[in-house]
Image (cartoon, rainbow, N blue to C red):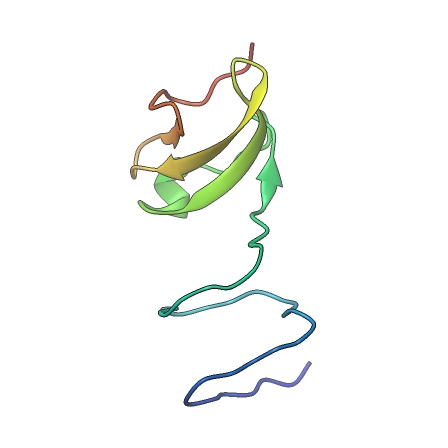
Length: 85
């Protein structure tokens, strides 16, 4: 697959597909789809690095949640370490 580098604003009327690497700044308009995991399939929070955001379908005692890596654990939106029910 080809790789293209842009400078300046880039607008899409139909979304973007594929991984984004590097720093991303600016406003986001529209939905953002996070990678989805279960507690059992979530990556290591240490390897992912602090600030990594994931969606965990069963991470809040069985309920779905967004989780952020603090560099050691993935912490749910409720402030707890993700865990299955």
